[in-house]
Amino acid sequence: MKVLVCISQVPDTSTKIVLKNNNTAISSDGVTYVINPYDEWYALIRAIELKETGIATEVHLVTVGSANVEPVIRKALALGGDEAIRIDADSDDPYETAGYIAEYAAGGAYDLILCGKESIDYNNGTTGTMLAGLLDINYVGFATGIQLEGNTAVVTREIEGGEETDACNLPVVISCQKGVAEARIPNMRGIMAARTRPLKVVVPTKIAPLTQILSYELPPAKAGIKLVSSDNMDELVALLHTEAKVI
Amino acid sequence: MSVIVLIEHTGGTIKKKNFEALHYAAHIAKQTGTTVTALVLGTVAVAEMESLGEYGAQKVLHVADSRLNELHARAYAGAVIAAAQKEGSKIIITLHDIGGRMVAPRVAVKLGAGLVAGALSYPDTEKGFVIKKAVFSGKAFAYVNILSDIKVIMLMPNTFPVAKIEGKAVVEQLDVSFGEEDFGVKVKAVNKVTGEVALADAELVVSGGRGMKGPENWGILEELAKELGAATACSRPVADSHWRPHHEHVGQTGGTVRPNLYIAVGISGAIQHLAGVNGSKNIVVINKDPEAPFFKAANYGVVGDAMEILPRLTAAVRKFKQQHK
Image (tube, rainbow over all chains, first blue to last red):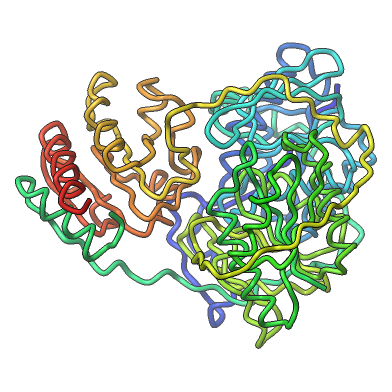
């Protein structure tokens, strides 16, 4: 069974967002880039577990980005995976990004494609669904558990107010979140091994984006906190009623 | 040419967040001189569908196939596409929730439509078709221009108003021919948490962290939630310690909430937690550490021991409710 894991590079959670070029871009000065947590902790680790248990024969990692994403994809390889593919394109349009991955995946005969439920930079959560649509295969979103039984994926997923267990034939795209796997950190052996694993660069056929980010804006500063005495909860309730208008 | 809105229902009952979507669609329809068509999939009473007219829909297209009572992403996407093609629609609206996110992106790629996920504003048509959305987990906003002829907009729930008007929608049956592959994902079991407010939809949330000291103390937090009609949530360490179920975990790697009120009890406010809650309209922080970073992100704060404060707050809410019956 061949598994493809979609990896994206994102600024670390603690990054302070600084705008530049008249608010049309995000400054990357001093920004630490990491593997998108949902891609790393859940999708990638579950794929590695499937390899370790002999269910998966090959695990490939794919990312869309220019050469500056290579350190992050190397870090992903240090966790596991047989090879990585960098699709040489810069895109912030979900359709364009999914299109590049779909173009690559279509020729790869993958049985299982895993991605995180969303990236923590653009917060779209659309890559997996779009990928399944472009490949015309099944999609299960918001997985909290993935089991493989022969040619069938059994997936526990979040639904509103609970959980559902689904089953479908491979191939399938599954977006992953907490519960799918337990996070790991790369060990020295993995880091050394990652240096010798292949990182292929693929030049895609250009896809025209369907959206364009015109500008960015930072949220307004908080007006400041109102502290209420711990002995006076009536005052807090009154504030929530008259001022916040939430009760 | 009408604006299509995918309506979600639970067992035939249509939730409030759909009315936000209809109001949003009505706003666009007014801008563009067209109408609003709601798309309802599965078994829903005619009266329930007609009542969508009170929220801005002129017409309801109903695909009555009972298999659609379960969310089948491929079939749902096929139905949305069939409805859009029937109406000649250029704008398709869903919610940015679990259902919408399973369906809308598939619709978008099939129609070659640009998509904005998590829309926070009405389209600005001065410079194209520009919609505001949150990025970097709410630390910034992006203004996204949809370049394509057909546009898909996924609305962030609990963002737009609901306006009730006089009206009754016309219900029309829509036949869609599905293939076996459209139902390729089989539902084997459903485990719904009953008697609780669903976190994703909650307008009020009471959330506990390690400051609650242990799972045995959650009763007083649940009492406050019950009094408020709020959902309960928790921080990551609490879920990791199995004090609370994983589906309650809110934050960077858990769920994201956008309630009108988020009460954080004994949560320090690590940046990862804030990423899941900073869409909240009002935040109350209760923490005995006056230096807890969460106070910087809060509207209201109480410094003190949660074990003492929570029962007092619950009693104050109860008293308020009795006075305002």
